[in-house]
Image (cartoon, rainbow over all chains, first blue to last red; front, side, top):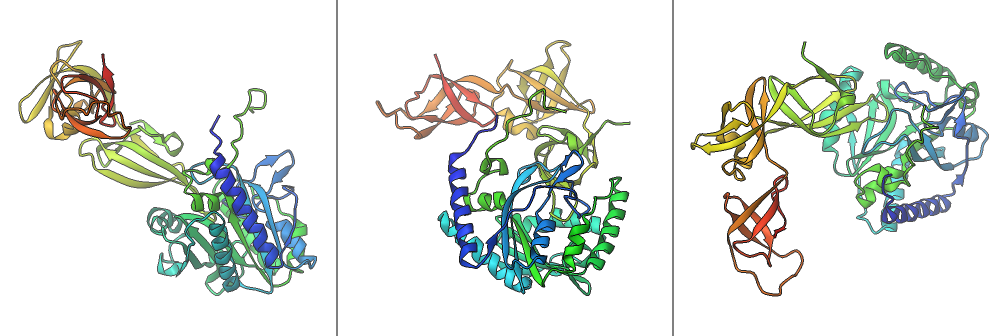
Length: 282
Length: 189
């Protein structure tokens, strides 16, 4: 049974308290959406945990967009998310995601918001307050590389150099996921802190038609990987057409705690799960 | 066909061949960009030169397993250029270039039993017992009653190695040393 670390769990609670206070001060409404859903992922390299005919969400994005389409304005959520086949020093199958959407805004406003939020979280645990460099991704790595090579080079050469707090923006359009595109560029950014990929943000694509095309492209990528297509949620695509202009961001709370406390691995900032018992092992 | 390891077999201590040289894995980490596929970042130590190589592998990528055998051997002598060992079962003798085992050589004393590693039938390195016991040949006198934790002084052992020992340990005493960390473990009564 892995050890439980009270010091990191207390820091985690202080960070979460600061995060909720920040959203209160900035006029955000906390929402709670179901974790058990018919379609848990859209992106080709995410594997949802299957529960009978349903899946556990890999992020609360689809459901939160239905809330946005209903006109509730600025919203945020802190919830467990699940990704199959992910385990390591910086990856856990179950982790905590903070996701928020700002209506009527784009990625520049979100860059300022995430910076301010992380700085507030750092002050809550008396960690050094990070100041972020901003880099266009094309200045780090050629956007013309084929996807497989692009990610290899990114992991092998580029990511290890991102040791300073950094916001990376201007990703190639083939990495748009659910972001809108502007010509060859996806209008999204990522946040690195302590060398960790901490958050991912989109100026949200508002056309269901565009997203249907991407679903078809993702199905093709998964077919090449020998994996079944992801189930799709028609209520989500319907909601996208009614969603106001907005930008959204997902931030890993466990990694934020790691970066601000120097915890050596993700398990140290979580309450460990007991090992499977013989009767529950499959 | 040589045996191959898959990225899911990766673990510390795994011995592999890269560009014809034997390497031992000293670090591995699962990495997956949020929008991309999974990779494994590794650090590998060249078993011949000691040089450390950093490599990233795609999930499912295969690496050739190193054909490493080890035999229990006794250290015989050092002729200045080679260290000579004898297989305790077959009495076969082998020589290893002294330069390539200089970290381990400091603990070698006549008749010490070690594991000699062979790569493709050629002796390349030695694995010491985790602990050795040896007598302190020289150290500064201890300060009586000083049991302050953490304070240490250098001590030279009769095998020639130097380790940091607590202040209360005296010249002529026998101590137990952890050869993996080059550190003092305890006094031997």
